[in-house]
Structure formats: structure tokens, C-alpha cells
Image: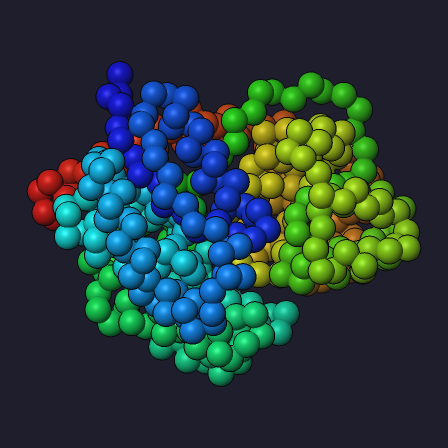
Length: 390
């Protein structure tokens, strides 16, 4: 039996709830249900509305208030380990130095590529861009990659470079969690210490789905450029016989108006998403950027739902072509349309891919499997600090 561990979870949440927020909440709940003692050190981006731009920039690079507040919590709670999900922008990497000074191990989940790319997903102008990978990311500032602002991009670049120069990323984080092998390799290319990066995927806690009649396709996610919404729309126009239900909202929602076969569902609750997944024949994941580990994908697998995904980044590692789903050329609406047509004509093969997806979920992505992995990472980090080894 694993003894209870005291864990301080650190997270800067987003103004619009996203995948990182959901993963943090899921892990927190998983640990609490198994008897561990959890405290949450949380900051919310809503605070940015009430502080000056200069103050926000300073806190992004090195937050003194964040460090002071964090040290007070660290001393009062006295955790065995600190697990950081996101420090950007209000907490800042200053907290790593506090934890290191007090001898507390730090585990950092790498949900995105912010430490290597100001835009966080290696995307510029609708194309994959690795100009900053392994280099000083000044190009990200010159191209205004973060929020189309050179000023804001410069702040992000300054944060990354300061902490690269003073050794924060190299020496003050005990263990990094990458979500898959593709992401781990990118972080190593970008200069993070390979010996400190371990792999743990995302998970969902889901019972076996009730089998029934499945029909049509499903898209779940933010309706924004990096998610390949325009590719989805073009494919739907080509493959007019397809029925695609779209769950989510975002800046490109208007692209879906009057598209044949497309039904807009708007943002849905997690229970409603599960219900949609139990009725669809395949999930479409047409991203044009490097995904980390879309939680939507593991939700689909848990629902016996195969995934039709871009052959890009980590997705070919997560979706076995012809086994748990189908891959298509990224950004290629014609290829996606052909894959949708094939799926419609081969419902038996698609159903088998769904069963294979559920089998992979049960083998790799359950809450129990994830719990064992996470506790092993915590134990490794705690031992490393005790023995003062990298």
C-alpha cells in the first residue's frame, strides 16, 4: 500500500478553461480519492485585467509576490513534493528557486512547448515552425508569435531566456513530465536535460461504454485555427455525404455556418461529450499544430471511438493507423475527405478500430495505470533530492 503523500499542486489557470486545467483537476481528484493530502496553489489569469502591463510583464519574468506567497504556503504546508502544471504568467519560474532553496522536489508537467516556443505549439502562419527550437527564440518576438504582439512576445522570450541563462530549467526542476515520446524528444532538442524528463500520458477515468448503433463523425475542441477547423470545413464540403457534429466554441465558429452535413452543438459539458462519443463512429482530430496529448483523444479511446487524425507531431504515436484510427496528411482536406468516405464505406472495420482503441485505453490510459506512474515519478523526485543527485 502506498503511504499518503503531501503534494502541493501549482497552477496558473486560463481565462477560458482548457485542457491543462482539466488535466490538473483530474490528477488532483485522482490523488485525493486515494488518500493523499493535497493543497492547491492557484492563480487565475482573470487577475491580469486588474494590473498594469508593466506589472504583468515583470511578474511573468520573475514574480516577487508569487515567490513570497509560494514560500509562505510551502513553509506552512510542508509538502513532500511540489507538482507544477503551469506558472505562466502570474506565478513565474521564481517559485522553482524557492522550492530548491528549501529542499523540496519539484515535478513539472510539460503541457505545451512554451519553454521552447513563445507561441507554445510551434505554429506560425498556419504552418509548423521550428525556427526557435534549440536557439534563442528572438524570432518569436520578431514575428509577434504570442498573441500577434511583438511586445508580449518579447516578454515571453525574456522569461524563457533569463531562466535558460541562470539555470532554472536545467537545475531547479527535479523531474519533468512529457506526455509522449515525441514531446520528450522535442524538449531534449530544445535543451532540457534528458535525464530529468520522464513520460506520463494524460488519462480519463471512464467505465466501458454501452454499445449501440453508431453513426456520423464528431469533432470536439476549440474552434480555432490551430485545431484545423478550416480543414474540417473544406473536407465536409468535399465529402457532402458525411454527417459531422461539432462540439465547442471559439473564434472560427462562423466558418461552420451553412456547411453541408455539419451540426454545431456549441460548448458541451463533459457528460454531454461522453454521450456524443458513445453515438459517433469516429472522432476527427484535424490539428495543424503539434499537439501534446489531447485529452479528447483519450476520452474517445475510452468510449471505443476510433480517431481520424492528422499525421503530425505526436498524433501518429498516439493513433495507430488502421488499428485505433486513421491518419491523413495534415492540412489536406482532400485526404481527410477520402478517409471520411472510406470510413462510411467500411463500418465493420471502423467498429473494430473502436474496440482496439478501448483496449489500448485499458492498457495504457486508465486512472489506475496513471496513478501508479505518477506515484513512481514522485518517489523518484523525492529520492533524487534526498540523495542530491540529478
